[in-house]
Length: 84
Image (cartoon, rainbow, N blue to C red; front, side, top):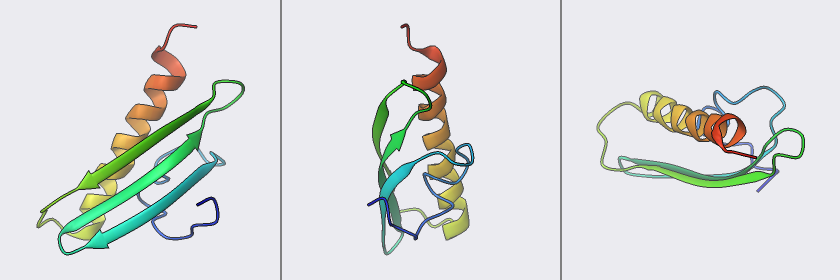
């Protein structure tokens, strides 16, 4: 999954440059998805996540942006909001 080159605008889309992301994208009909293990900086660990946009008539680019922002919100939460 770390060698996947598809979906650069999904989970990887708005994460900080250089963030390690092992992921796998998928599409079928009006559904777009991406699953990943995201490596947090320093000793903060990893986050596993799955994002699915199902039955959306929005263009692919808009679905990708939604997935990217969901991933960034999760990344920020685990990096900045969890107690040590």
